Length: 235
View (tube, rainbow, N blue to C red):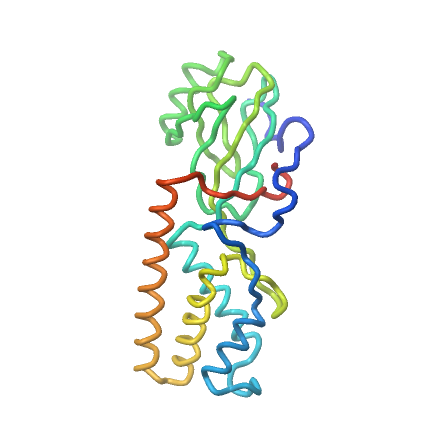
């Protein structure tokens, strides 16, 4: 089997004018500082005596992880050219949460489990041509049969949120989820304060809102094409 490579020809650029995630039909523009101001105002801690910056940063990261794991909202598209005789390619981004689909020359290629892929490979390892299946192993995906031409490979992905490190950082999730991030941070603050009734209320509000927005996402995706972003170098 050929060595793992990062892709084919030089990468093109896709949607350069939309550097931030643009999904759910609205962009991400709110910052962690916006979350902190809202939380401290509601909590009655404008001076930041009880809730430290690092608490808020940690809770914002947790909130975004919970939201994205539930609703899979960070859509991305990566494009690269295949190499003749090269079957195996690295994933373009370590933040991949889920691979939705891989297309080769405009055709969706089915994914198969590794044991089934082994059978495919043993039967087709000497063959080349348009791929019929792909499988994942150790940070790469492999086509079977091996591509025999330079064609466009498109990956449709959902991503994990970018890890927040500073109050000035922009959230990964769209602005429509800003209130949910605030609710999640608030419930963590109330838990720290041992206000269990407030924790229960905020948890219920958070769950209900995220579930409702998730249903909106699924309905919208059935009605129109999702808006997608470029993934780092694969574009």
